[in-house]
Length: 71
Image (cartoon, rainbow, N blue to C red; front, side):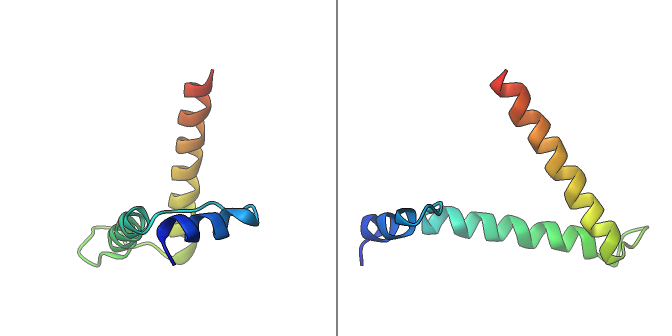
């Protein structure tokens, strides 16, 4: 299956297609983010609830940035 065929198959049901190279970069960034949150060398360690809060705040910052660019 070609990338074009794969993209058509994925988008046919309304899903968003992410090309392999971009998905790889997204996965790399996710790994780096988790390492930042779980680094035991940090002055402060985070529990799972703290980590979820950090990600929620980041999502809100991104949403505000996107909505301000749309205005």
